[in-house]
Length: 454
Image (cartoon, rainbow, N blue to C red; front, side):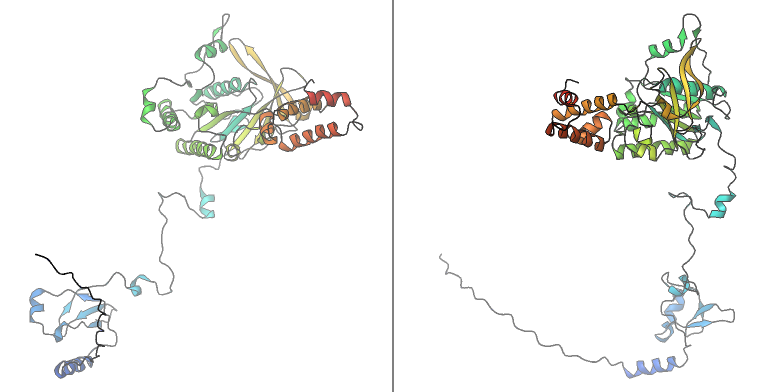
């Protein structure tokens, strides 16, 4: 069977007729009932009020009895009265603005959740707190006081670990280091040693003549267990170390924590985010467990002719910004073997060991204990390398070598621990000496610098 082709025709839709408006007219009997009832209603009618009427009573009510009426008694309470004269309990809508909003249009009182992120008190209430009226006890003079997160930094092989163990031994005994005060009583100290091996630690604090140094029972030394199976339970090494530090604090009941050194925590302290995360973590456990923390850090290569400053701390500036205090160990360029301690930052203590009053000391051994012996005070400028012509030439030679290799000014500055402006001026001077050979006062020195022979 063959089908004929279908013919499609596009038809325009027909317009629907315009709607005709028909006004609503109530039946006359209903309108009469409404007018009669309207004469007996009070002036105030709350349309949002709902009354709860027994089912048997509702069945007997006519259309008129279902209209809601409010009456106010002599005590000011509102009641629902149905047309049949019965009073019923009522439930107001929660969105009633008249009930929620005070008469003076002020917002309702709201108390901040005490378990929230902040503790909010007025200034008078803060002054009324009596738990911190007494000054914090000193752990290592004014350089480190109780409940502080302190950073001690110095160049490598300067004696950071020696001084850290000496401070830990002093706190565990409650005895001050000569030259500094320790007003805190004996307390357990947890020392995380990421620097020395067990053999190095034993050889440093023992001798054939005097035997082993008798540390107290309150001195705990912790080293890293490279074969711990627990680290695979955590997403990152940082989370693993942070968890174990808190476990160790609770186990030893330590009141003082010393970390040697900060780079071994692997938080990436050279970038701002890593340094911020680390310092926030240390501040959190400091407040949670009410402990004092000392963290050891390094300094990059620095100009020995300039005073030590907060810019000499290796890593992000966020480290020292979020620390409570900081001090550094410097090395005298005038007397070999002489060290000095300089106060870099302080919040809860006065500056007693600034640039004009650094504390001098040497590393000595008494029996089987290696430690610092402090001998007096001096001005820092007396122990800096002089800005001699020989030092200037040596610095320019160090700058010229990486510049010939094509390194940028900023990269050279990071590598040598100098300011980029210093690198730029030195390169400009070398370039000027190469162009103006006739005006150069020391042609032989310039040629040596440019050729790398000096």
